[in-house]
Image (cartoon, rainbow, N blue to C red; front, top):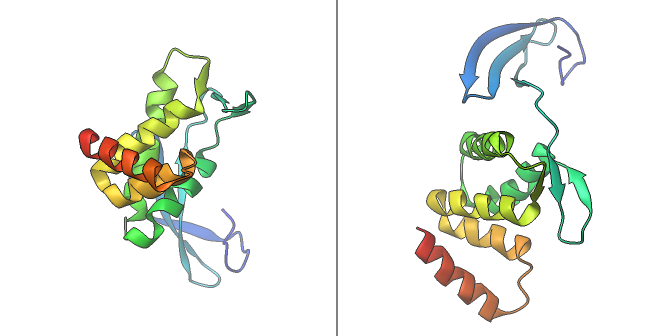
Length: 150
């Protein structure tokens, strides 16, 4: 593994933990600069295809989903581990699904349902982008819907 700080390839694993059912978390230390960093090892699974609203089909991108959720939770002090667990759980459910193509709206609803249990304001912030709110009425309707979900 190459050190992200000094680019040395002399690193060692100092701690290893299973992170849910889909990943192994490894804490590493660079033997050259002595800095520590974390890596995740995941089993490469079947490619998931996502049907976007405009009709395009794209490959599922875990990092894109993480960026969207992280934007909604960044100012709400939701720990990154909780976000990673949420994404892993959603990814696992998608993998066991019988569907060849999954609608992006289904993933959005899965995120909203789980995010509502973690932090309602983060869920609202996520919904504002995912549902493309255009008015305060849209926000009010979503608030009412999120209240029913929790």
